[in-house]
Image 1 (cartoon, rainbow, N blue to C red):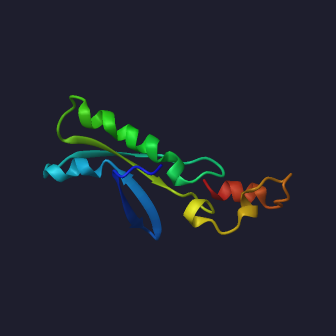
Image 2 (cartoon, rainbow, N blue to C red):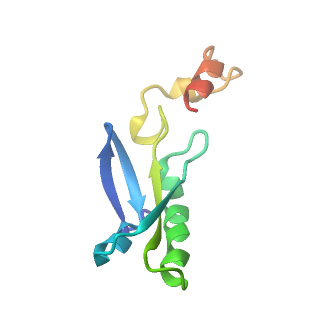
Length: 108
C-alpha cells in the first residue's frame, strides 16, 4: 500500500518519492538530514514506502530541536519498477542472463 504522506518529485528525469516534507511547512529554516531508502533486487520503490514513512514519524514527534528534521527518499533502481526496460536483465546467469555481472554492477 502506498502511503498518502509523500510528495512525488521529478529529479533528473527520475520520479522520487519524498517523505517528511510536511515538516518544512512551518516556515522555519531547518537543518535537514536525508535518508535514501532503496529497494532490493527485483523490488521497486513502493516496497519501501512504509519504511520510509516510518523513519520520519519518530523524528516529528520526539523532543528534538525544532529546526532539525529528517526526510526519506525512495526511487526505483535502474531497470526496476517504473524504470523497467528488460526483465531478463534482472535475472541471474542460471536463468539465462549472460550480462548478469554488469547488470548487477550498474545498479550501484
